[in-house]
Image (tube, one colour):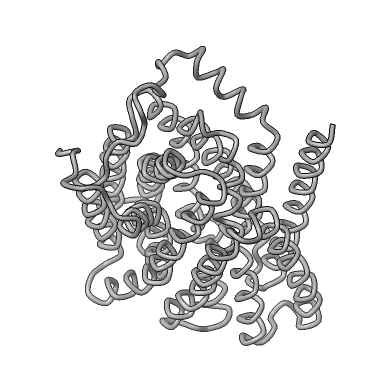
Length: 406
């Protein structure tokens, strides 16, 4: 492949390319949501908790893959490892298309996740190679604006495909979009890892880098917070289809409803991209965590009073508030975790991405057991995530301020 672009990418093309690559994860999750019922029927899946493994198995592969592929990029460069990741993703997609059993489908999803780890974690490393601090947070927020278009359109794409073909073709669409992203990246994006920053691939070097990342309180603290918040969001993704398509009886309108809610994340990310330069990342994170906690606490009282199923309008208002807060948190938490890791961007992005993803996947799998087709578990999950994130963030910033004043 030609790795020498004709000319440098503009800022907006760079944002669009990074957003497309990052959004392959969202596409691989959300496009299949309308088809979960058909998958359950065709592959004889009885339990809704078991069916949610179609979502969480991808996240497990994603978490493991980031930890493996991130360090490799510090030795061989960003581009070769991204190429490797796409090849793995294509293999997993083919397996999903032709999966004869549910177990093989889960294996394909896991392999998809392994491959997606490369574009997911290395886009973060590439951005960190080019930007830092508030500038990185701003870029991440603008990327999330473009990124959120995919979660909005993916269920609609999946629903459209199901009108003309079976659910395996949804995975075929993922494969086709992945090819487009790979070709665009190969032609237009130059290598960002400078030769002097490449690290020899030695176990002792990787272990030393891993210890350095894990011993950094800021990086680990905000990684844990990101994992907890993402875990709550992944719990929503796993329960959205049975909750709204079945419990709230939205039927085929579920894809439109899901897309409308996703718009709140995009708009809040755009708002954050402008405000974070003025107010700073910590300010935005603390306000978003406070808003998430208060709205969840109030709505949990309402949910209990309504026997778990408040009117759809009330639920919609609550989820718009939740996703507005999450849109602010996503970009800022990742940027805060990566801020002290500029000299270890590949390893740092790998540990931050892998640990946060594995935490979120573990939480989603554990919390899926409590899903009872009502809003009680989901609302309690968001409340708990907000409180835990606030405690960790307070601990990080309190100790950092203490160190500065000493």
